[in-house]
Amino acid sequence: MEIYKNIQEMKSYLKEMRKEGKKIGFVPTMGYLHEGHLSLIRRAAVENDLVVVSIFVNPRQFGPGEDFERYPRNIEQDIRLSQEAGANVLFVPGINEMYPEGFNTYVEVKQLTETLCGKSRPGHFLGVTTVVNKLFHIVNPDRAYFGQKDAQQVIVIQRMVKDLNIDVEVVVCPIVREADGLAMSSRNVYLNSEERGQAIVLFHALNMAKERIEQGERDAMRLKKQIEMMIQQQPLANIDYVSIVDGENLEEVKEINHKVLIALAVKFGTTRLIDNMIVEV
Ligand code: AMP
Figure 1 (cartoon, rainbow, N blue to C red):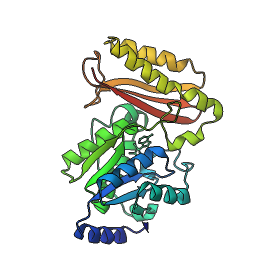
Figure 2 (figure 1 turned 180 degrees about the vertical axis):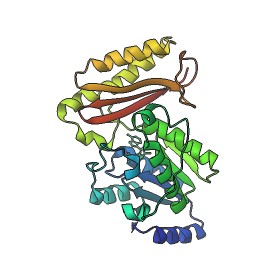
Figure 3 (figure 1 turned 90 degrees about the vertical axis):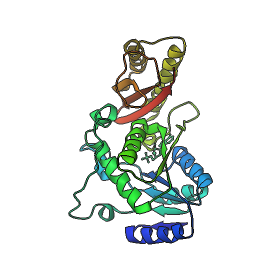
Figure 4 (figure 1 turned 120 degrees about the vertical axis):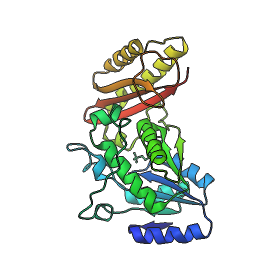
């Protein structure tokens, strides 16, 4: 497997590959890879000739007081796992390579970034869209793979790709969960055993909500209250938000009468977890 830290070298290598007619699949990550990431890499390997995985803990998508410094890292393990999953190239730039002195350009998607996680993490999506834009320019992929785990991120990236006429197909992959249903996340390692035990309520609450909708519940406010009550029964859970929004424009819905996204962000101790489910009516 090829490993690049330098942007110019990464670009020239991929230019050669493209000349050979190779289709490039790209999986951007922050590393500390788990089965969720690996599912994206495996799919990219099936659908493309060359798979590029980036590992970059992007400081600009973390707010002050968030977990940038303690975000888990294990590059040796990431190299092994990504190679086994079918990656051909790892791009692992340093912070100064991505943001050299004088860096001053941002890409901002409006509106869609002002709700849900954008509300509780101001500046987060500005960091995400800026870095993904840079990565798209560096890798110039035919397809880019993102997880439904970060539902709002997917919608924001799709908007950016459309608005800026970026020539890439965005492929969205399903949420990969632990055996008991907890959505896989690099941040799950922060949870102590008590928090880990209680965190399963997120999946249970989403399932309960889906069942209620299937049984005919259409009142979003009432369902939201039920979800909140269920989560609050876990003493270590601290709700950031529970939202039922339109699956396309992320606007809060009153009546559940089309495709909705039920999205949650809940803190267990100091660890903020997100999860979501799409329900079609
Ligand atoms: P991250 O390293 O957290 O930035 O995630 C990199 C990519 O992996 C993003 O597109 C995530 O949505 C995706 N991802 C993370 N966790 C999961 C999961 N449990 N299932 C599916 N995709 C995931």
